[in-house]
Length: 115
Length: 114
Image (spheres, each protein chain N blue to C red):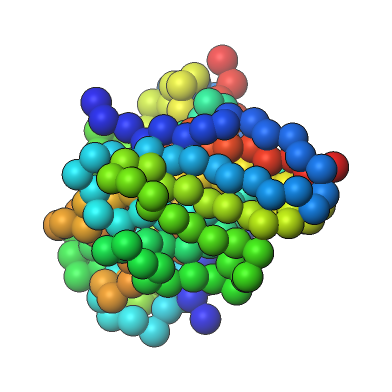
């Protein structure tokens, strides 16, 4: 069964460093998302991406964040200069955008630890 | 503002028993969809059940069913004949017809006791 894959599963970085989290969405999906979950807190929407551009973003997604779909398969989240409060689990998700509205398929997440 | 509230941070249930997880939401939209997602310890969130707001009939998926009270903006999940594999964090979420991103509640950690 097709699934969303994310790498790395865990990354430890120093504050101020750049981090790139990678995702391979399900191949025929058109909408891509990044969510994050700070330990013990709710899952928060960061950004959605469709037709090679950002379609929606939250207040969390400030200038330190960017997303890119550099080729036909990868979908990346870049944090330019990490802060301690960026430590969280980051989830990538995708959906076909067809009849099953809201049925997002999530990856297993990338745990980011900022020291 | 669109919000989802799960008032039970933790719940436990005896194996084979029934448990109900509560969820309320707030929206001014008339076209929306409600979901329960399960996040087991392996971390990947998977969809458990889905309810279209325009449908009056409560959704059912095997041992999982919902009690959708539209006027009260309530959307509870009932798990019947609980199994050890049901132990997970359960998130209530919704999406409007015009949006493409889910809004999640804070989650309920369900423990299933053998």
